[in-house]
Image 1 (tube, rainbow, N blue to C red):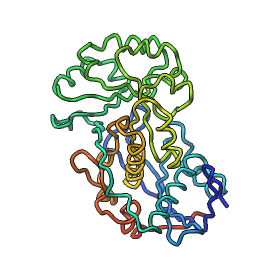
Image 2: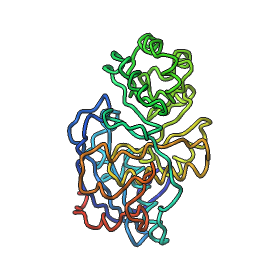
Image 3: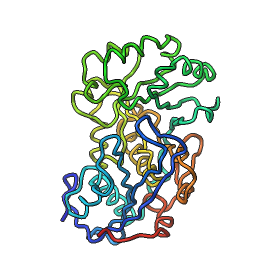
Image 4: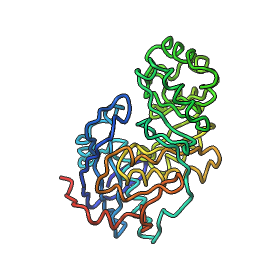
Length: 331
């Protein structure tokens, strides 16, 4: 018996499929352009006839333990939170399959465009997310000129905790023109985790919303206007509870992971939108294009700015594709 997220589950078998994704460019200021590794999980539960699937894709740069250690905790029956969340999403799919249910089609979730290469920007994009590094801060006027090329676009800026000094954060914001500030929807993790709870933060970034990703302590949440939630990091019921408990807007994103992880994020976004309605803001699920084409690229597609599976089978909609993979026992 495995206790995960307050739920006792009896797992009878676990199989894994390792995968590798090659980014087209660095995915954020903390990562490199090297291949990223993850593992798909196929889990059988005693109370259900067919298995469920999930994605396990840790970000060591952002504080997760390495993939091998994550899998070791599952094998030992003491899963880390990221693994526990994966197990519960797999159980969610196994139950859906037992009931003959497909998670999709469902509510279409509008998405922003995650723009890693500015040369790929076009005027049709009305909401885009930019990763901001020290280079962009030092050459901020270049970004303002870029904004001017797309006057109808709003921008979400993700700093991944760039500023470790509040004075540096203040200096940056003071150089942002009033016109550019009007184009910025929010600033995601502008400062380090240690500074996110600072009472000075909202005073520094006057006129902009602050978005919080990952480090969801009670103190940090007090400074956030927006929560960025990645469903693969939460058990389904905990995900919904966190969204309900927050009074501001919620943005659901993928973890820039496998297409299966994107579909889990889509399901999470649907659950959240169902309970918080208009506070569920445009999501960040369209991340498959951040990688070079690979075997699973065709599992998902973009339709009118939303993510959907290519086929609408039971559960995640891609069981036929999953069945064709090479699986090995977790030993």
